[in-house]
Each structure stands twice: as structure tokens, then as C-alpha cells.
Length: 447
Image: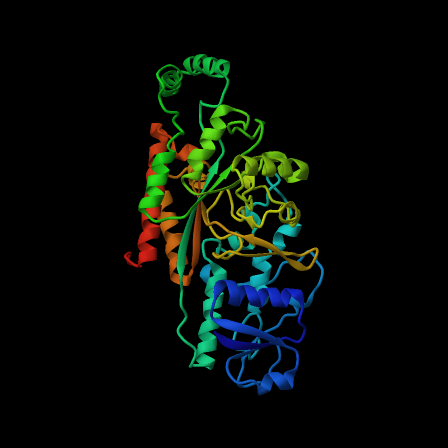
């Protein structure tokens, strides 16, 4: 790797974090970063150099410095945004610099989710609303905007230092599945299923009556028990899958098979054959660390020794920075909740995994954030689109990640693989987007 020297007037935790996110996460294995505050020593270095805010070095790339990354505390703040869509930039600067905006500050603002620390309103589940975000208001939510900026930065570096190699853009894909139920009818007491039969009859749910009756009295498979099919699709398309499963008692928003039921152990074994298993904490865990600890220990015991390092919050309930800090302190090292439930897109403007930065403690935590770009329920239940319309949007986002480099993560739910007729288009959509991901990884799909 090539040495890259960066002059910073102040080596703050936020400045170091922003540059490392750019060069270690978005542009991995490209440069060895060296930070310096000594101007003369910086000028004496040969090879590629970046001056963050100080002019006068003709043999260095000059990036404007707004001073935002020198701050050490949090304050309610909204940066200026120039442009719309893919042309959007944050912290624009009128100067003679090689870039026309403070790129590290822009990357930091989005990746740290600075705007979510002072959100004006939340939804019924206490979540930051996608419509309130800068990305939605300036129409760049469906662009991995950080990668566009970093590509611009690297192009400017190559223009200044022509010996640098052409940028290598790698595409990767991860399929993730949330197990909110496990089974539709199994795992429930017999009396509940009998009562359900009568209720289905009163509401004229013919297919539900048929499925439930066959399962209870004719050993028919549960409609949600389509896990062998999921495994075949993942294996056929050479896709890594991560499963998030609940380990809790039933509640208003928690409907999964309870851990003490005999069917739960069978469910876990089915899921382990598909991919690595992580925790899907119950709804109230956000404000109950003791409950999160208990669920983590319980699922880890069920997995018989597998370390429980990954989680995705149920309903994507996040509080900044408490939920991330809580997860780290309890022993998780990978967080998969960075995305929106109601719309597809890039919540943090980025499509690679990256470390979490706690604004209130002003430090990076050893907790990796894995942002996802599309959740099938956003199309199915929020925008009420067809599976064909959903595929068109997923393909658009996936091809953008392929073009600019990064990893595309999708989220599916167990009910969308149901054997019931209304779920079949969504299971087919799952198959189709896995096939597209494989083609893009293998370079077989035209762009």
C-alpha cells in the first residue's frame, strides 16, 4: 500500500475517524494514512499528500476545512446543503481548494447520524422518521452519496498524482432475514389453534382454515416453514445469509415462538443450516438492558457455544447513541439496524460496514455498523407496491452500489417466504434479487 500524508491543523478524534472511514472503509487497502500537524515536515514528504484546510502546498491536494470536525461536543446543527440528488454536497465552501466542500465533515455528519441526535419528531415507535432526514429532503437517500464523494476525492488525487493506480471498486452482497414469527401456527398451545380455526371461520378465511387444519390433523408443514427453500436459494446463488431470531416471551409486538416451546429448538436448527444466527431483541429491550442481556444469554445457550456478537433491533428502534452504546457494553460487536423500515435507501449515505462514533463521548466505539439498503416490508406494507415495482427499485439501488463500490445488504422477513399465495411474489422477488447480486459479483450482468 502507498503512504498518504494528511496535514491536519488539529488532530481531533472526529478528524481521524472521518479520514479513516474514507480510506480504511470506503477505499480499503489503498493507502497507509499518516497524520501530521508539522507543516514543514509535511511539505518535505514525497508522494501523495492531502492538506486539510491549509493552502500553500502546490504538491498536495487541498480540501476545505470548515472547522466542524474540530468540535468536541454535540450541538443541534444542520449543515448547509448545496444541490439535489446525486449532486448534493454538505458543507460547501467557496475557495481555491481542489474540492468545493468539506468532504470529511460531510462524511462524518452522515455516518455518525448527527441529525438523529436532535430529531424534531419521532413516529409511534419512537423512531427517527426518514422524511425528516437531509437525504430525503434533498433527494439523495437513494444514492450511496458518501461513495460518490469519495470517488470524486480519489479522482482529484489521481489528477494531482498521476502515478496512483486506477481505483478498484469491489461489489459485495449480504442477505439478512428477520425471524419475527418462526412459524405461523406451530409453537402455539393447541387451544389457541382450535380457537383460531373458529375465528378464521367467522372471518371467512378459507386458506387459513385449510392450512391450520392440515397442520393440526394431517401433519402438513406450517406455511412459514419454508426454510429449506431459502437455504437452496442461498446455496445456489453463493450468498452469505445472516439470520436474526427472537428469544423472548410473547408481547404486543413480539410474536415469535417462545424459547421454552419444543418447536423453538427445531426452528433454531433449521436456521443454523441457512446462515449465522444473531439476536433480534424484543420490542422493549431498547429501554431495558437487563432484558437484552437475558435474551442474549438465552439465545447463545440455545446455539451451544456460538458467540452472540450480531443484533438487529426489532422494529429498528434506535436511540442515538444509547442503543449502540448499550449493545457494545453488553457484548455485541456488530449492529445491523441502520436503515429505514418505510423506505429503501442509504440512511447513513454509505454502503459499507463502518465503526460507530459516539458523539456524546466523542470517541469511536469498537462496534461495527452494517447499513442495509432495502427491506421488503417497506414496499409490501408501507408504499403498497407490487413485487415487480419493488424489484425495479432494488435493482436500481444494487446497481448503484455495484457502480460506486460497496456492499448491498437486504432485509427479508419470514412471513414473506410463506407458502400462502399472497406471499409467493415476495419469495420470488427474494430469489430474483439473489440472482442479480450473483450476476453483479461475477460480472455477468450489464450495467
